[in-house]
Length: 380
Image 1 (spheres, rainbow, N blue to C red):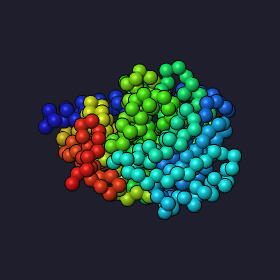
Image 2: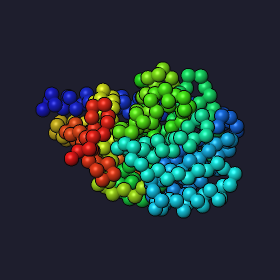
Image 3: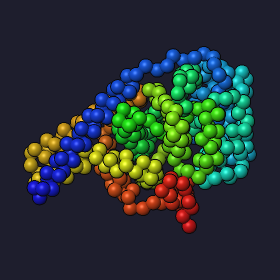
Image 4: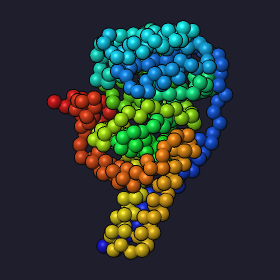
């Protein structure tokens, strides 16, 4: 038992080092200056695929239409003429007559990733040389496009992307999802920024010139990939161009997720991440400070020093989560939601282990196998 206790002590210490590194990375990254927003510049086409309506859809879409930048075009794409989003899109076109707004029906299935399939059918209607791909559940500030345009104008930049926070959460699953983003995902992105550099994109918003998209094979090459955002950023980085991650957090609408929905989504993400970045994902196992400190406590016979180790771990994890959510992402997560951190951390360790026990994921009601290169294959 002494050897086992020593192992868990070493793992706890290593996890503490990572948490401190993440805290420093967050402070440095979000302390960087944003590029000054441009009021005018090269035209930008926003590609917005939709399917159905959420409670926050109008607010999210309006935030893009109210941008302090010109010129830009917005293309909305829906899968069929019965989509419930169509009346809202028609209302928005009337409410913003000064904007270039196109609404397209995109019924074809051009791959296993329905988002990319819709984007492929929208791309040919783009009028401008800069493309911005963004989910329908994203809300941005009025100067967002101006800052993205300024970032794209910088030398060697091939793609611009942004971190994100989750919006208000109503259910337990949604609270855990928001906490996972602020306590785990964004700290890991900030750490990667300084440790290895950013060679991936974050799917909430991704902007790049059309010529670069064409150079890397276009959207067609992403049609059967689950992690299309990772693939897009990685392929741009392979050309030698920079993936620019702005220290500007956008907000995503947080859907009402059940606990089962949360675990299914996290397992899908974990197995996809394991395939895309196997080395980084294996190293991610060292970050689970709470599990290792609890394991040390139990293996050492519940000694006071073990309790102290757990207490320090909880304090450190709480500091990272609070700093990331409140100071960096400018979120409004309640203290009660932050109180779910121990549950989330233990669940995260279990999901990390579970991700190695299979290669199938459930997505939009279907089961897929993820190949070593990250492609989806239907699992019959």
